[in-house]
Image (cartoon, rainbow, N blue to C red; front, side):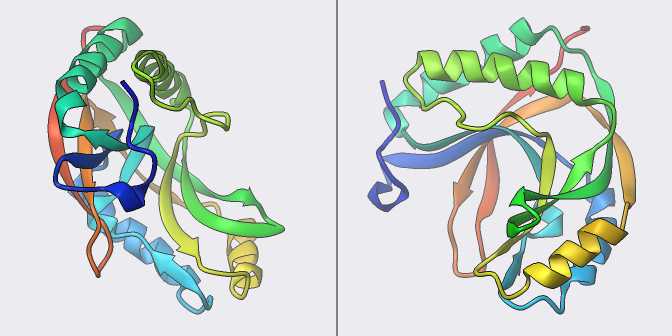
Length: 201
């Protein structure tokens, strides 16, 4: 089994999906406040604070007939990771790929990265076994705040990232979700497909 080759081939017979930890509603306001610091940067597109999440494994287009296998892979991965509920702090700022060429602006995660990395690695192992592409970069837990269309706003983005070290808040991670992403004119809309509760650790 393999994912569909590209987003352009999406059809009703496939869904665009990823595994993630969703952030609670209470963090939407501090995320929006932080995004406002970048508001004057030209060519920047903000993510919806109310849909903020921490991606553990992006799958891309998944054939509808493969969804059951993906669900089962997610269940095995969360169990194999051996991670119980844990506290997670959203803090700090960073960019991809570098401050010289800002493509994505993100908020980071505090010291609780070990549990997230274990979940990511378990999901990576299970999904690549199904034929999905392995990650091409080292896993960096983050919450995407904005994306840039070009280099016009990189100066302001670089300045804000260098000068600010925000603490957005903490929450308890109790589950991982398989999420469908549906593109719209106003940006993607995310809907959960399946929820996997963390175990006792």
